[in-house]
Length: 122
Image (tube, rainbow, N blue to C red; front, side, top):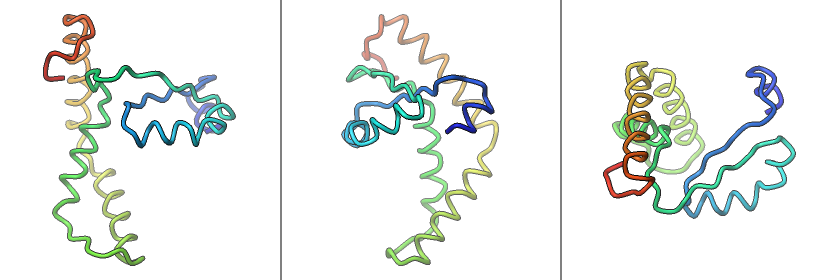
């Protein structure tokens, strides 16, 4: 974390999490570590539109690795899944990233138009 903060020259890192139960649990577990590294967790309103563009990227990644058959939980299978995930991440086309970034701005405008309400397909 320190090297990341130095590299991008920021005093704090911001973490945006939705309100899924796993994020809420980890928020409690990691609170001291977050303070230690200066990570600021932004509160996210429940039932808000998901503007975090990593989510569609994870969907893309899941689609990419779904063609692989990972059956079992032995070390070889787990290591193979990790290698495959890294490979698909590194091969992620720039056009996919660009499209998701553009989609963020469009969704943000829709949130503003709807006064922050989640009454559209965001």
